Image (cartoon, rainbow, N blue to C red; front, side):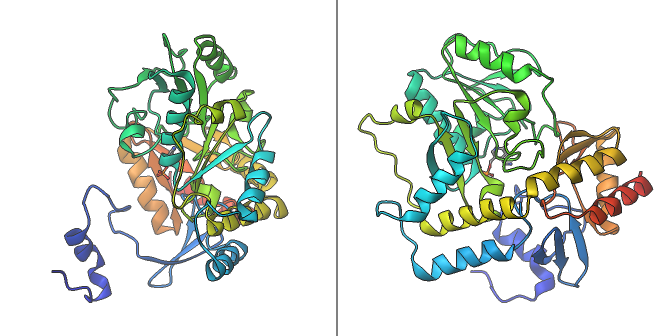
Length: 378
Ligand code: PMP
């Protein structure tokens, strides 16, 4: 019943008729982005924006090697994982090689939410328990199960919320879920030793420790490939999403053989799209580009450069936050940066934190351009 052919300037109006307003648009004057390249986005009028928001386009928007890997495999075969296919096995081995022992059994899914849902099922199957502890202000996904792990916008009723930085209070927990640096909470870094102590408490009570690397993984934090390594811990389960496929819907859960085997109870795990040859090819290309372009070291160098220019910022590598005085100030800074050709997001319980998490393709000149624009705007 809707005319599908309306003129382009009507996108916002037409969108309101066929899409839920619960999915809000960024900016007072929404952007119409038509192309991406490296750390840049281009709108319909040809204006160029430096993208400091998109940690999904991890190795750069539309990276040619990732695009080529996906296109080539799509033209050849895309099917599920019930046939033998070398690339998903190669990919699992390559992914496992980035993690400490004994984390090397991979499950492939299609999003971060799905990865956390599967981690929850694994933890419950492994422990035979139900209860889960999470950190306050955490976000672990939009599924009915993962919203229950996410005190981000509303207190969940089915998990124990641990105030920052208290130790999880649990009797007989299935699991403790934590982001190694909290993203939606406003780029909040745990104090030194926190994760180690929290893991001890949870493990003493017989629970599993799940680390959500959906925002922080794949070299973004610079010093390490995984952000949990900053905390000196080895989790029982690691969940991955966003950057893993550079924009292609892909997610993963990596765990120990012992935890993975708790699924061998006759209830099979099958996921129609998870780990298909196209996703595996893309995931492999992303890992290749991170290694070949030395993006982890680059994230560290660019992060240090940004931190040197923003002494009050917090975070690691290219996962940084700047605490401002109010929600109104954060909103003003975001709009003013947009007017200067820079896209940045705001988040946190009071929506007063600027979040800096660009594609790792960002250059030193881009960093300096942002720093001078920010100084100007502030
Ligand atoms: N975990 C974290 C830490 C996230 O930030 C997000 C998404 N913002 C998710 C999980 C859910 O990922 P997705 O939206 O891909 O389902």
